[in-house]
Amino acid sequence: MKRLFMVPLLLAATSLFGQISVGVTIGAPPPPHVLKVRPAAPGPDYLWVDGYWYPVNGHYKWHEGYWTRPPYAGAHWIAPNHDGSHWFEGYWEGDRGKVRHEHEWDHSHNRDYHHDHDR
Picture 1: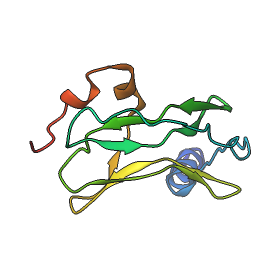
Picture 2 (picture 1 turned 180 degrees about the vertical axis):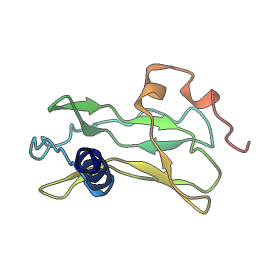
Picture 3 (picture 1 turned 30 degrees about the vertical axis):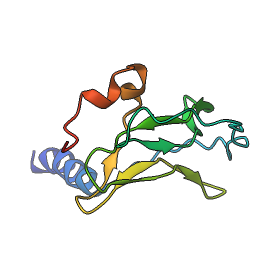
């Protein structure tokens, strides 16, 4: 009886320290689209974010460049990049730390007015 109790306990303890990692490799993104004319800034507090490719379900999707306000004063955009084997998402960075870019924000024309921007 003790032996039957020890097997599940041993398996449970082993699984606490185990790790499973799954990755998908889709290669480097295509070259960026060329922007011939940057549109005028909508206001003085806006920064331009160049367009970039980002992975979605095993392929790359183009994200057009756009004007936006940073998540807090002094934050600057770190563009997404691909080092030849891994893709790294873009993010905002500054003295208050990193802020992850949420692509859901991009579907709203008022995306810059939903967040506290210290203005």
